[in-house]
Amino acid sequence: MKQPAKGEQAIYFNLIDQYEKYVSLEELEGSKVLLSFHPLAWTKVCAEQMKSPAP
Image (cartoon, rainbow, N blue to C red; front, top):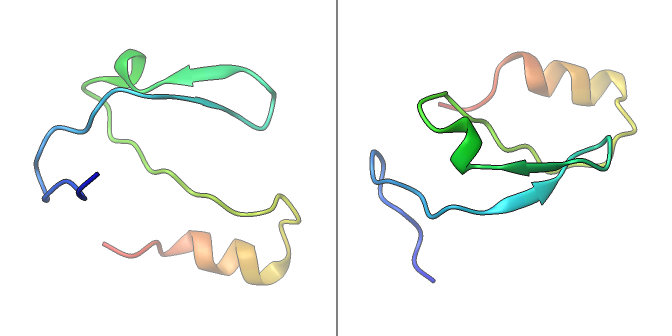
């Protein structure tokens, strides 16, 4: 599967969140979405990294 270009519509998919609930990209359509895959240790390093995500 190729990586979508900036501005290109992503394919619909479902993921399980940290609360074990399904989240569908389709239900978030029209919203800005940031996917962040990391352990939920939430150290000071994690917190600092999330304050300024890459553009």
